[in-house]
Each structure stands twice: as structure tokens, then as C-alpha cells.
Image (cartoon, rainbow, N blue to C red; front, side):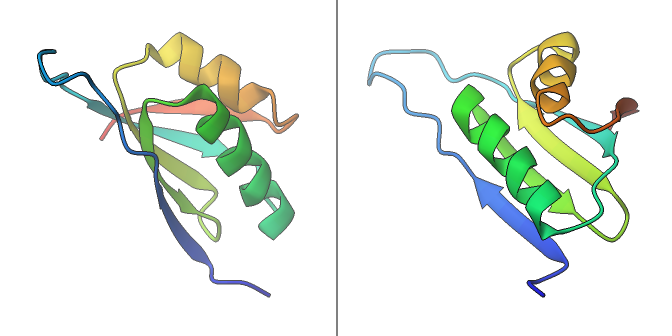
Length: 90
């Protein structure tokens, strides 16, 4: 079995002259039971892009730093087929 805590960073690439974007940190509960579940979360978040995230598999939590709205993050996490709820800002 893989590591219980996974940290993945998807680097934000911006043009040289663009403004720096402030990322907000949000915490979600995701009904993950195995490494396959956490891989599904990683896959959908990496596909979305513009995020940095930590997956805490034992506690079934995902912390996301992102400029995206909570609604979009919930929708994206929901694509895993797992039950998802927003726990609040972190």
C-alpha cells in the first residue's frame, strides 16, 4: 500500500507581465477508501489545473489552494464519483 499522505503541486504558469493571483485554501471531505480513490482525486484536480493540493487519505480530506470557486472545486471533485462535502476555508 502506498503512502497515507500525498502532496501534489500543479504549478501555475503565468505570462511574465501578468498579475500574481492569490490562491485561497479550502478543505473538503471526500469519501476515499483506497489509493485508487486518492489517485482519482489527483487526476480530476490535475485536469482542472490552477490548483495545489494535499490529500490526506486516512482522514478522507483534501486541502486545495486555488483561485477557482468552491462550486467549481466541488463539481470537479464530484467527477470522482465519491461523496464530497465542503468543510470550509483552511
